[in-house]
Image 1: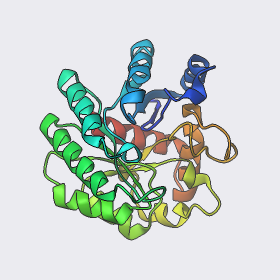
Image 2: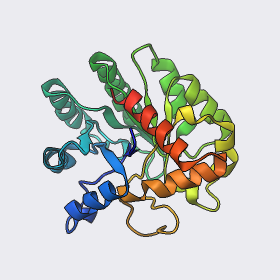
Image 3: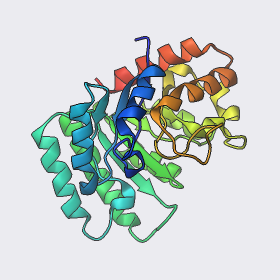
Image 4: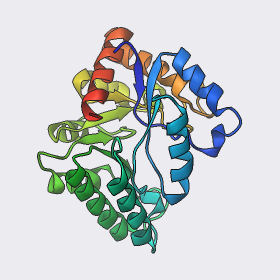
Length: 255
């Protein structure tokens, strides 16, 4: 397990259209052995599947409906997700969750779509990958209501406080740590020293949220070691320990 895992990267995005295979080779050279790809909606599926099939096991697909894609016709989108989940094995159900950052119009629909997809994850005994931008407390409450012995996963792009981190880890979920950990005012320098490495996984959310010193530019999986180094500095441990623990944690989630 001498490699990093990027537990969350949209490497099928158009941002990588001109250099996708070179970008994945850079990730390999940086020691990133696996990249998990959360789905967004029906429009991202074909490209995601193509990359998975061409990547020699490096890129692994998840299946779900992103909360920002939950609109009036979300049932139609969910029907496609349900079809795919019945058709083949996926690493996880995701990216699912809630989002109050851009638009609050479909909040009730977001909660309904999330609940439906969580129940599919239980049915297929898959972990879930949770998006909760500007809605972390509400999403934790939803998970607390839905939790059973078959439900686990990752709270992607965690940037919350210590109390929120404790609530999440008590549920048996991992905290996905990415570029925000490297931001000067990201806040995780106050939180991570109070959390055990056993509860963390690494991610990039490529092409978004690039870590320092690439902040504001396109993110990519080869930057995972930068996140690991920052976590090591904050938690006063070695990068090797961060790599070993987070890889173990990711493989435990994505069985």
